[in-house]
Amino acid sequence: MHEKVKDYLEKMEAEKIKTKEQHLIDLGICEIEYEEDTEHNKHSKEFSNYDAESNRYFKYVNIDVSDEEYEQICRLENNSLNDKNSVAVALNILTVFIIAIGIFGGIALADKSFDSFIICIISSFISAIFLLSLSEIIKLLQKIYYNSLKQ
Image 1: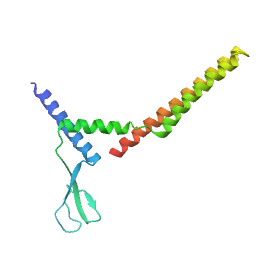
Image 2: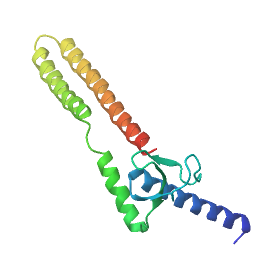
Image 3: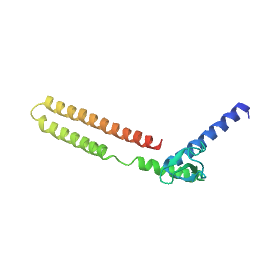
Image 4: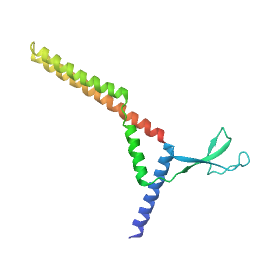
């Protein structure tokens, strides 16, 4: 194997492991290790977090997680992120309701004029598309919010 390819693969594998470890820490799947008692204001940079209750510095320590366990954790996390947002669900239900009202209203108005039928159908579909778009924006904002909590 070429030396540059080997270096690149090692670098990417190390980055993957670092990302996995940080992800597990963000999820709270880690242990806390406290720094040995030291003089106040003199602590190791390695212990960058401070616990006000115990007045000690600490760091997060990764626990060993197999690749299979990590995949299962990620799968379960994605399922929890895909939980429905109640506002988005309400907008989707309202969208179906508006489409149904538009179709039935259009059919009822079709007896009087074809133009009324077309206007009713088109306006209901435009409203439905707007509400579906708003619902999707809310879902995406929720994903962005959950991702920001991880960091």
